[in-house]
Image 1 (spheres, rainbow, N blue to C red):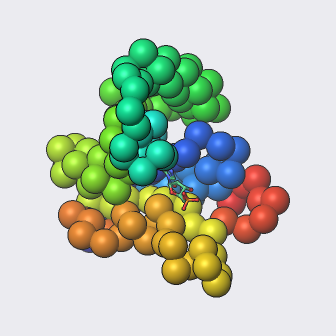
Image 2 (spheres, rainbow, N blue to C red):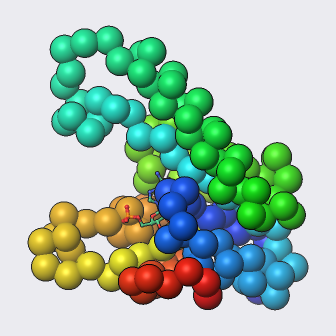
Length: 149
Ligand code: AMP
């Protein structure tokens, strides 16, 4: 059964270009729709969730900057229409799963660094997304310095 709707998750760095390219190729081969998502992580999360000050203004700015970065990133993929580009706020795993369910996606595509040692113990977004995913997950191996797939 070919995939029907592929969701590609990006951290908006150039490193994600091969991930998008792979998702695009898969979508073309399957005749599937492709959507792209970036998740803005709450600042409090970076500080362990316990910050004794109001971060709402900073978070609003963070979200607006992320929208500009998303627009600039997706400028490279003009075939992605506005309804195929998503920006969400929260924990990447949770939000990627939520969006995949909401949009009826049957494949999530993420990048994977294939970490070793301590980083492997700490986990990665790809690992995280795999657990409890509502559909198939493809982890595209990111090689150092690679810019296209
Ligand atoms: P990481 O393990 O955080 O280096 O990220 C590996 C992959 O997870 C990236 O190549 C993206 O596909 C995805 N990813 C990481 N951070 C985000 C984010 N904030 N929003 C959406 N996808 C992300």
